[in-house]
Image (cartoon, rainbow, N blue to C red; front, side, top):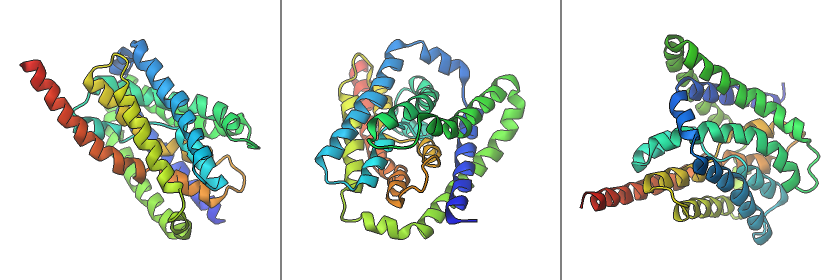
Length: 287
């Protein structure tokens, strides 16, 4: 068994357990209710799969990125919203009901749009749209849908399964982090001094502030939720897509691996800032 085989097995365990955990705690009633908002759906799709990818393309033109780093950044731009978004929403005192629809909407949109847009954005890409879509359907969409169905039709079973699956997701995440740090440490070191990390930081800060500033009629708590959603990235979706690449360059993998820590380090202080703005908005409303 090669190093790549072990990594792909870890990707499967990490992705399936995290998406299953999300499905088992999904409040489908609140999600469907929130999805009735055309503004929420349109803005999520525009910020996530129009503005975000366009911004990433601009960064690849402006910054002297190595080609594998540039490809990684484009994949990075096509998978918004991390599973830990609810934690940030609570810290930001943002709209939880609004955010309830963001995650499942983003997961489904990622499965559909990433395979369609990646071959268009990445010039010379030899991987077909179906090759990218297949692991996303199997590893991302299927666990989410199956576990969401269990939550709806067998709630007691879902409640018993959730702690076990949640713990498995946490363990698989730690194993994945440990594995990549040990076996890809040199590749991480090589990014120091390049524009790879800086490109992700600029992307995350830019898309978060833009989506917050231009709310297009959203309330303050909804703008905060949208900005934090766009600031975070769905590593599960990126890992699933990564498995479709034959003999991928480790530098592309590094960009995907950074999709966890880089957005998190930016989103946490942003959540605190949005919480302070929420306090001022509440004080203004009370006055």
